[in-house]
Length: 421
Image (tube, rainbow, N blue to C red):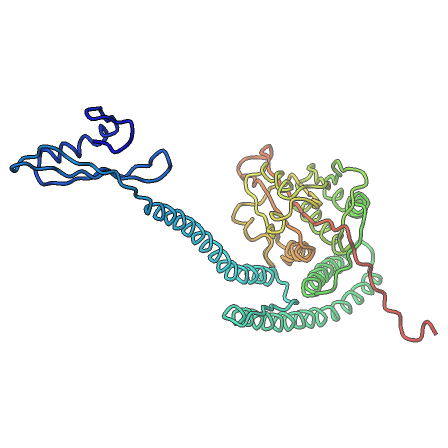
């Protein structure tokens, strides 16, 4: 039976077909009441049907069904939405708090890593400072204490090297003077004159070694200036071309763009180029060529030239990988016997040399100057097999990559007191 209007006795109610399973259970198991699953009506309200058996002499003769509103379950749905929203907000809060906590930890670590790399490059001037009031500040203080100890030791070593170099250079000057006087008194072409000439050559070599020591120990302020790249290379090439010609080696300039500028300490950059070209000339054989050129590069693009060689090593390249533009690369390439892979790992270390006579400070000084400019020094080489014959190709490429700075502070000139009245 149905209490709704318009429904007569004996009419079929198709709605209850959905509850057929529940009705069968009521008639099969006397005394058992069942209910349907909850469903949403056309009005958007939740309903639930309940069925109970009608017994006569112990048998189920009919069943009564009631459709009841389950509107109170709407609150559960609302609660479900609130719970999902709270879960999402909670997850976002956890992610945000985790990111903030991670940043408070990684930020001082990154700062200490930067400082450690700076100290590793030999820059001991700036203080390692981290104001936090926690363990990271304690670690930064320990770093700064180490920096001060290294700086004190470095200054002591510089003073010692400078003192030794000056003490050696003074008697060398006297010996050179007396050798010159003896050479004037001896007949030209005599055996004694040849002996004096050899002594003078050895004194000249010792002077170069002493000057290398002094230059390596010196730590002065750089004077960065803007200069024309071609003019600088032309000047150095003109200075060394006849030295290399005397050894049967041709010194040539490669293609360079017009108007290309460099930012560097002029005297120190000249020293770098002289060291690299002289090393290239000394490593070259008669009839070979040394080529020098310069061009603008974009970050690691400068190192693509190294791929032509069997092995290569890049020194001080961290800045090169981080900055994509604003670089100038100077290339010095020779056709000499090359450098083995084992030697390549040590070639820029102080006092390492493969020459019979050499201080081993030329490339070390070059590396130091490049480091002071914030640049990179790259070395690539293909070593020639001693048993491979002269036709086997070999050679070495030195690449000096320097940052180009648009803004340069003008050099300050100190005027003695009283000059201006």
